[in-house]
Length: 302
Picture 1 (cartoon, rainbow, N blue to C red):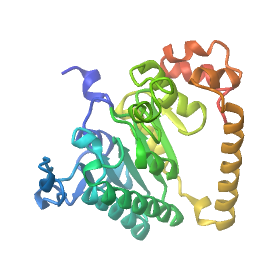
Picture 2: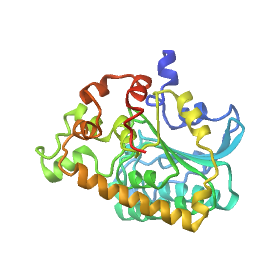
Picture 3: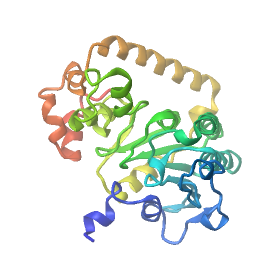
Picture 4: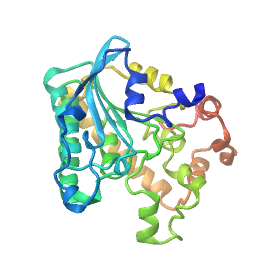
């Protein structure tokens, strides 16, 4: 196994990401596989189950800072959220609101709600969103890390946008509906899910960073995610101030409305980048992360 492979965030699984992010020996798992907290629904549908229901939760140290961590296992049912999976994540966030650690890290690797238990999954998403905002209201920063194969789609895409900070790599993806879903519902003329370059120009980390839906863009290395997460462990004081939180929400809504009006006719990330005044936007996808950050520093939305 090559060094690049061992340290790639994209190639790692949930436990490898946790081990690479946190201080050695500091991670303490909660509701581990030995507890066999499994979905009660999958067996009834003749579907395989996992002893951790596709998510690892616990606590540990990130460069000496105490953090709670949840890492979705994308290899199990696409990281889909079901009843137990969602309950473990909700419980971790509620624990954060009560204990007030230095932060919460959400290592997202999911296509959204698990269709096999959709109603339970949808309820879980609403509970996760509420718990995320409750943790933030307690002053605890909640940080989403997105650089996996599944990215963050569906309800968990919404959860990511409820977080204090979103950290992405170029390989990560973030959206509400996945490309295949859009193509199925609206047709290939609306969105060709087989056009991988288009998919990443619309949902990928570079695009999300340019339009400020991700606040930090890093290279595909666990160490890079660790440094960015550590830097983001700043107490979420704005969320504890009702007036400041309301003003920030109103400003965000105004910005979103302005973007819809400005970009409503765009069908590709390249169109949006061109409207931002970026010269030769078609060259951006070819740039390495550091070169991309340098080339777009003056054009990224505030």
